[in-house]
Length: 288
Image (cartoon, rainbow, N blue to C red; front, side, top):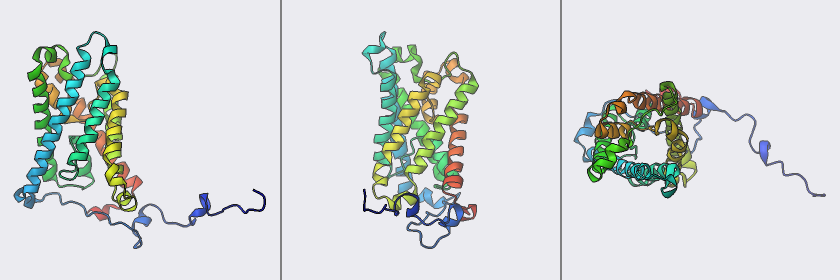
């Protein structure tokens, strides 16, 4: 408007041009958050703590419930001759994403709410937890997934065995390379979201971030499922793939099974490196 000066405090002029970035910014004494110390690789003292085993039980129960609800939803869709009478692919994606949202919210304060060996692996690479805890979590996640799929089969064995058992396979028309690429990228999206949603810097500066963290994680799972269900049925979680494969236990369920371990672990490693080294620019010496 005439007679009023432009507010130059907005936009590019709001910040000084010589703000340090990257690693230099991390070394400032004036930062308003504290980077958590790196977890030790081995921590024998954890084995004597009840909280360690409680966290493992929480991972088992969360993965059990995750497989039970999600695989049961898949069975409800595939058994119907008309997909218009079911929740369809979108409903399957919502079941997976919604359960992750709910379960991360429930277990984040106990175990961190991983519910996925790929997430655990990515956080291990970033030194967010010890190798001892990571191995324990992965074992409990796999056991929970096996039990969850087993309960679904127990309810409807004929339906379960006659409709693929929710096992992950590369769909006809796609190569193993296509499936591997889909799993790598899908897991990258998930694990990168986990790192961003639980970032110590954001948690310190935005008080709402810890409360909302389960929402973007669950939404990332939903979106990845929408994109990759037609390709691989969407794994991005080795425990989920293993549980369904063991309970279904047909040869074609094992033919491509390696993809659902190699792909998610590569994707998780890439996400950990990208977030820690590129986005946060945390120097390696700080992890020693």
